[in-house]
Image 1 (cartoon, rainbow, N blue to C red):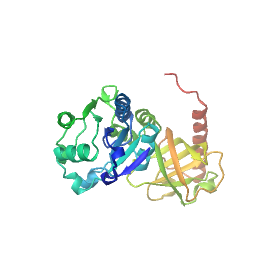
Image 2: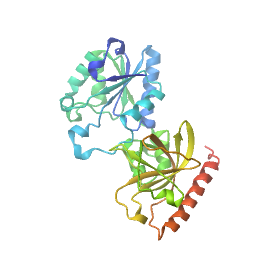
Image 3: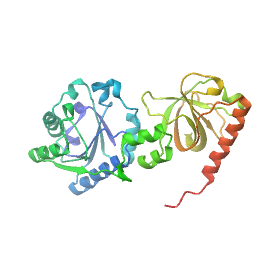
Image 4: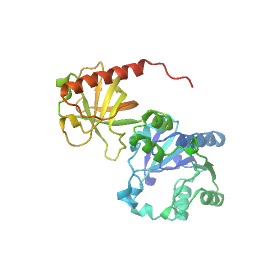
Length: 313
């Protein structure tokens, strides 16, 4: 997959493609249906598929106080897009000038002049242009004028509600990690550099890797989770704590994971934690010994979950 940073980097070889259009936070099952639709169009038309997204959430420019916590960083989004068979990954710079593009100007300047798209696949509720004045029906009419096909992709439903980034954020806030994974099509993850912590775990017999998560990333509800991590190419089971460590009266939210059956120094290294199940909520314990006993129970529960057969579908 080729990454294209900004419209100024678009070359003739990138044009005449089928375009997936949206912000795609999380690249959940609804987004993946859009990608699949674009890939099918690409096969039918004999064209490559381009995935277009923004370098930041539009609210970073329009309403900074209303930026939602993000399910995926740009680099994570790039990795998932590549795994879905995308040919070109276009990063559009959403700056004040871009935010003022009218809906007509967006179609003419971006889709037609810069990209010369052959077809566009977008969600049924896709909005674009200044003040979100353009919708999928308007885009279809403009496609007829400029000679490209527009496909409106319906939502993926769960019950009577569509799967959406907002719905997944709500699951994470409530600690419903399994539901979030089901909607995402993969386990939710946090990625960051391992940094020095308060060194409270090692004296208890459970050393932890403290992870400095990217600013703005959605953090699951405080509590203890069964997770898995990749350490040097080997998948390991881990127990991850998210919270303020009330037993020790520490301040500030921490993400720390105890990697089972592992010994080694991870300081300064990148680590990705994949959340599999919520074990319990955050609690204050009467003593370090009481906390140690509970951690032993948490590890036992995590091992039991790993050993349990997957439920039949």
